[in-house]
Amino acid sequence: MKKKEWNEGLDHLDPDIVEKYVEQKDRLARQRKMSKAMWLRFGAVAACFVLIVSAIVVVTMLKGDAPGIIPNPDNSDRYKDFTIQSGEYGIVWPWEYKTVYEKYYSIDVGGTEFIGQQRELSASYVGEKLGSYKATGYDDTSDEVYHEYFDAYEIKDVASNRLIAVKMEDHYYVFISEKYNPPATWGGVLEEYSLPQYVKLGRFSVDGDGKEKAYHILNNDEYIWSVLSEAENAEAANPVGWHNNIGSYISFTVTSEAFGIYKRAMYITESGYVWTNAFDGEYLYYIGEDAAGKIIKHAKDNSTAAEFEPYNKTVAGKVTEITDDYILVDDSVLCKDPADGITYKVMLDDVKISRYVECDFVKVGSTVVVSYEGDIDTKSGNAISKAIDISEGIISDGDVLIPE
Image (cartoon, rainbow, N blue to C red; front, side, top):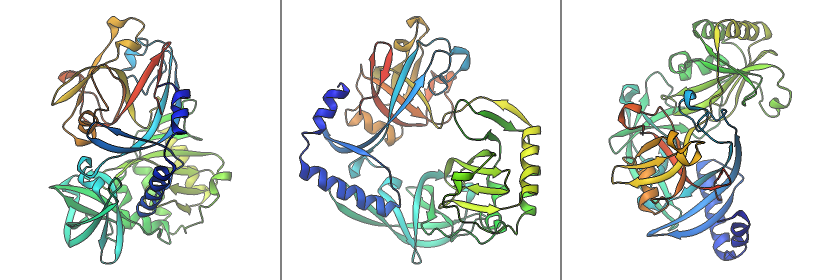
């Protein structure tokens, strides 16, 4: 569908349906403690009744400079010049098509509400059992509230009033306290979250993110954690408006399975602050210009240059085959020479992806963009085992467009 046709289609939505959906979305947003600027579309697909909320994100992908679409830099000259107009959207699935952690996003533990991070946790991180507690879920399509009891556990060496593990269908998932309550000192953060144990400081950028910025990989983070540990008495500061005068800084990428977080950030500024959004909000502490300067200098002097890395990796192409186990996506349509095309095998063993097929979003002949984490297994037919979502695309005059 062309964008003009799509926008005109929005004008014909039943206002009562839109109003009801907005009310549901707002209630769910409050329950999940999240808010986004979004616009919506509404539709029925096959046997699945779904709501889709969307926000357009445009990314220009030039020849030889498409790290989000090319898994192997050696193949970067395969593609034509093109633009991806990517839709950052969430489909509100019917109850039966949700994963268990999507269904039950909140659990009450002794009067404290914990919100699911929607990330699985290895059993090796799980500590003592805390008890069995009532979780809450909400079905957007039927407006029904569900409850179920699940066992909750400590996460080893992490304060249980901050983060817990919840066992659902024989897997563990990270839940975080919904209370925004940063420790009074930086030492409290280090202790309550066991930061040096669970966060490996590696990739960082200088003065912001984006393709034009400088990226580095730290050789070793022990010295930086030692300096940060010495600043344990640093007191919490108010982060409101702080970004407006941030000055020069380095930004570490923070990923931790134990915390259920992926590519959050930790800043060290020349003005003497450490800031992170790794937990239940923004944490800001003044560690002093001397400590910050040592960290920044050490990082720059003990690292190697690195390339820009997108938040999520993607592949795009035509769907050539759908089986019970996988989808084949052929990217030759994007190549200067179709003979250089690569076929990717997107595995369907996770309901997060198989539901796109079951609900008829993806068919043979569809042009799609697949977002994924992890690596492509080239030894297993370019298999993608950690796909996150699939977006429908349109190719026009060498461009790949994602209709919203």
